[in-house]
Image (cartoon, rainbow, N blue to C red; front, side, top):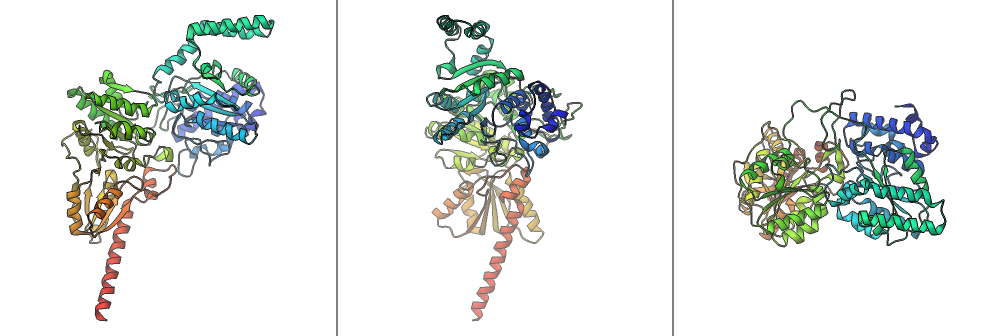
Length: 637
């Protein structure tokens, strides 16, 4: 750790530095951030882009008394280093360690916790009004990226901000990126703002001259600048919303940032301020392989060579299997369309984007729009595949209900990262999709147990035109080097008997089949043979097979990677409605949010592992033995 950074353990320490020390401090903070992530892995690029911005904000504003609200939190690593967590950073994204996002329970400096984007301005407005109601004068600063401006919630907040009287500053961190390069009209508009040289010259001339001129001439110059701006830009969008707009300014010029923030912080007079800052995502680090996403998320890497440490045996991820299979289907079916919300790489669609650019749509961080856009495509007889992480589809739930399910439109939902996600923790866990999708009329919900099943389900979804259909699969990789292609069309609602036993049956959905088979193998050593069924469908469930199993078994155990109200609820509903006398035990996620940990440990904590099946099986057998003993005693009496 470098000399100046060693002395800084809090924003108060930072404020004791001279302005001339800040440039060197920023260099050291950037180097320290790179060093930490080289040993932990994580979100690197976003933090490197805001080194100077983070430093200037903490240097000028009285944090934590003034409230600093980060959007998403990918960029918060330097903020954490500056706010008393420097010595804990090597626990980043590990069990019981530092979260990869801002987290209220972690530090007083984290006044807002988030893992989803576009929430910062809304939260900041709420905080500012909360302070106002208590007659408090703290400043509230929201930092939001240009990529987050593709989400509707950001506009709802910006629209509401100027209608209210509060001490609010919005920092627009404009790096022309979200995860992938930013898309849409707002990105183009911000670029236009930055490169409008005549406007910038007129503005700078006016600002430098106003203090030297009489009021009448000053007003004429202001009017001239407004006319020039209107002619070139059609009016500034943010000013039209009621913000005092400052910028664009160089987000890596620490002295200028400090100067502007100093002038701004004491000049809020009932009108929100928006400061447009241009930054470079990933500034100061060039890894050997990650380029398109500017080091959004990286593995651990060698600090000297900048080579990422990647396992020597690398099997294809489920995301890549999806991407390969949809490309294969699209070669012969021109009606297949792929849609993603700023996650082309994460959802495995890069290959599709290259091969079929006229049938690929990245709509930006706009999940609601993605779903309704897909519904519109389906209205015209096309086959839209909407690839969105399970946790992010939550943001478009009303559109899934109202625009897709209600109209029974054949939209294909590909839910990546279903279940626990390891280091990203609770904010990104796909815990609820089985519940929130299976409760909808017309919806079909599939969950593959293996890579081959995933390939088969993608092909099945492509051919299904009777209504909406979803495939949910976890973050993870195949156990096979080759990417499977579809070899079977699955009958909707048809389960698969994997192993036949007696008295006890495990109904597994998704990749919990592996845990079920481990339990079967362990129990077999004790002379206990259980039936294992891959249910494949959370909805509709295989009523015929389920009825047959209920007639020949004493205990059903369901297991799923999801919350209460999911697959198990549909099995229970079937049993209850058909007056079936059978014992049912269900394994699903506990009613709690699980912090970051390994995927395996998170499932163990949640109680959906093989040992949980074994526990329920043994408990049933012991209970049965006890009942038999009691019956014999009664017979003797």
